[in-house]
Image (cartoon, rainbow, N blue to C red; front, side, top):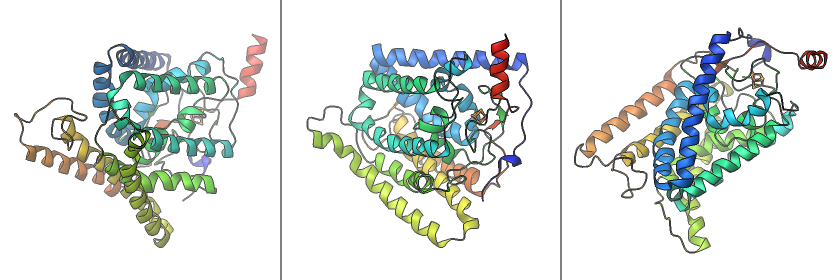
Length: 361
Ligand code: SF4
């Protein structure tokens, strides 16, 4: 069902004390990110462990429960929003068409980059570090031109499509610790829209394609991804790109299932179908990732954080993954939509007033 801007209430401004608290938290998380980046570049084994085997495994659960917390403290977001915070941004507004194209590129980037973990990033901290630096470079450049989160955080960031899919029924709305005033930089702001999901604003062909790719394709893509071993020393280009085969197969299977179901169900059940695929995606991730973290992965040491094979029996991890699956289906599929957005929308601002104020100052 289309959601109108007028349905959203503008929130109160953060107090100076709350802003300071958020800046401290953002600074602390940014420092953690900087340390991880430093390790990736100069102590690659440690960096890979910290980034791929600690930070990334926590992220999907955080997106499901409290997407807004991540949106407030993501170190990449903190970096790319610096031009805006320091009033160095030209603060342009993207058209709906431009934003839709950025969203489509974001999902294509996600599906292109993630399989490369098997052939490159999982074993190569420097490559991972350079990828993060490249993203930061693109994001900061966009930040010099476009208003608030429009171009990167709600546009080109490859994680954003996943945020929109998993963050459909978050625990609570928290204050927006980046946008001091809402400049309506995105037509339907994902931060401020209750129970946002990839279909909520999909009207054009590009928007519908993006929604289809993330909702239908992600669960199968994740399943396929976990059926590929890490191959750090691939010699041929063919072998290098073979890491795409299984994710692509899984992606295609669930995409087709989703497309068929979506075409036969009544429109009022569309959101439920999206929630089901979101729950399937995140459950599938932890179904494979939790055992792998503790030494019970399908491919020996791939993605292992600590080996508990001699301490905990395999069935205990089966039990844990059944519990996580039940939890995610309860949280995303069975729980009633609670009308919470990731963040509380700040008071609306007036761009022209701000410029006039600056000129007279
Ligand atoms: S809260 Fe307003 S200014 Fe901030 S990202 Fe959303 S639309 Fe843009």
